[in-house]
Image (cartoon, rainbow, N blue to C red):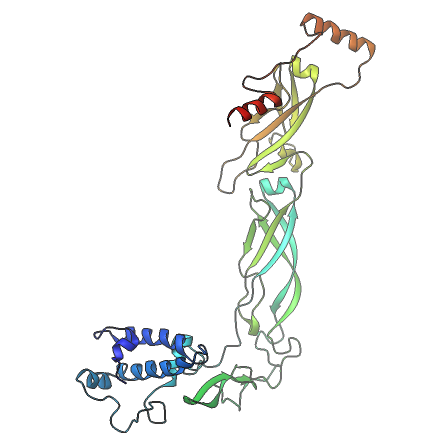
Length: 392
């Protein structure tokens, strides 16, 4: 091998062991024959591996730095045979990130007791309940602790036994031969499914799982200010884990039902009020129900369930009036507004006397032959077209 080993790995001569290992992992992933089918990849992979074999060994690296032959001493030129001193684990580290990879030292048996999954249910509430909060009784169907075995999964009076196949390790070794030599991998034991123990006499109630499904009733407190999509978390009220493990969390997702009067925009409430033409012209006062009217209140609660809306004389259709603090309370405090859109209703049918009175009013106002008003800056369609052509 005539090329400098440091150049092969792309590191400096004063690189530490971690830098050399990272460089090798990167190159091994790039040139491994199982990943790179190019004919030159196998040879390049061998060169990179031999360079790492030398530079990762302090004694061989020192000999190489002094100009000696690191492969002397009966190791042969191949570098991949038995006794070459090259660990196949280093190759697997390049793909699986170190000692935790599937070909590294044993991971041990996996525990039977594990945390349960989170659960999600949806509940529909009224706009008033979303605004002011409520308490609901919910029926949920989740996995709960088996009361017969208390999560152990074994029948009363019995115990798990050590797996004879893996001797409690939870893993078994598989050896394969390749051009790299013998490859030893560890796989979960099929006999015990990786647990290391076997339950010879499982609980009849839960079939050895340590949990059963059951329907139960929970009380959930919905805070004031929630909206559609808000999730209320109930800690440790979800699925009990395998082996009687700790329960996950239960999330209650809120859906707010449409309201016949109000629509919600953030913390503001919007509604539309229709008034006759005469009331808009002369002015009037209306009594509007508030959202509090939808909540059952005691007779002496003192909560206002209505509010007075003053329609000023000359109010135009489409006018919005804002009533401060009459909207939805926020989750973090404060309260939105109630926005009232006033629509002026024009009569479509008049009896002779009504028509006569309106004609008299039009005469008094000089409006028998109205010409209409054009807003400043507005132009006809033909005027806009003319301007568009003049600009070109």
